Image 1: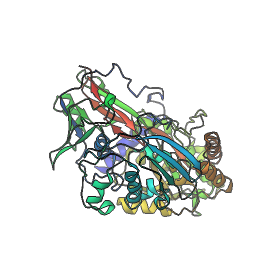
Image 2: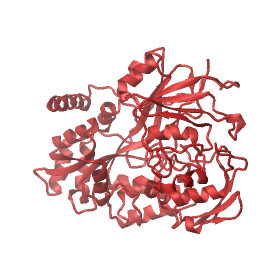
Image 3: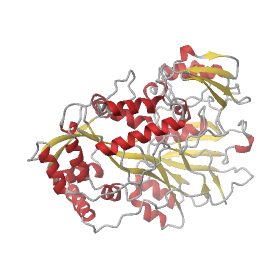
Image 4: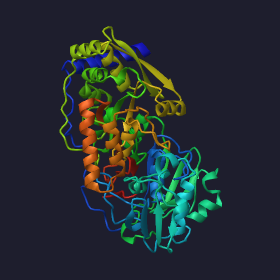
Length: 529
């Protein structure tokens, strides 16, 4: 069976490679617009949302929470800083009403007054202090809280606090708008043991539009509208939302088509045309903005330390075919590790060139590999269609790719230590610092690097430091533009295409969106019927 699947994938790839396939254009609209205004009267309906699986640990900041968990938590909890996910510009709906930069290491936060948790307590700077203290101990220390030094925070009064960074990090404050840095009641979290808690869920601890009502394990989780929400002009529209768990992707979609559920999250893009043709449902494709990247490890003295070998890989990769077959043609083609939808993209048009096997073989021969070479490609979980296509594309040019499968923890440790030649990864669009750290050879004091590609170029490292530490936005954009220029000139790795998520909804439901680094947010949904 595995051999049959592999042959089928190769056959489809070859069709695309030699021009028999007509991919979607990168201009295909993928984000539905709002077609009607939200009604003024709130609904008494309880709607049902189908998730791919039942959540496990659900306490934000403390636990690592993937997209389905974040979708629930974003109804109950809110980030300190609300921002537009494309531009990262602050919005007026934030729990912090003002951020003042004192210097490169200190910022004064002024809290919005009158915000109350679901337990009735007022949100104050004591909650912010404890949020950071426990966040530094929790599972997100390496990815969100590593840059903050809560021991050096100064509480000025109930609504003003000076937060301290342990090093200049220009995107540090922007991290607080992401979905894993959510505000909780300090007293509620302290009562269950803080970061050491064994609880799976934290009740009456959020400030959000909805609050937890009931969790029946194996059946559903239900939230109800918070009628005491601090922003009376933006209350939760529905009386409640019930989450059910349907593992099979097709079954989730059919549940919306049959009317058994109102929204299904995380569907297969390959079925987009089927759903789009059904008048009883609404397809909701959303631009995650993240970019798929094939990292080439040039930091361990292996074959990819030679630019000619990296260029040979680039000459063999058909990005259009990968996007068409591996992502149903929805993505935008990229050419660096900075997504074309990132706030730091330099705007240089992407030039897509067809594969050139002869050029690749010539480059390999010049690099000392006239008979080709064998490399290891790290893969976590299972081998995707994209990974199989990359393997076959490189084989045509004389590069044999051996797949290395491992459990997730082992896999990511291998990425951090550079124990790979290649790996295919999704890199953040909003969290634009991450892909650079995954590539550069700078030695960090924290573990927020799932890369280890370790490029050692002195000029590139200097650009990276400027990108990380430039608080002036113009200087920061210039640093990222320089990085992208250098990346293209030196083929440091291979940018492939941007990513799209697909949800399905009842035709009258509006307002499904993405937040932060790409979690589905339904806190603002409503019905037009």
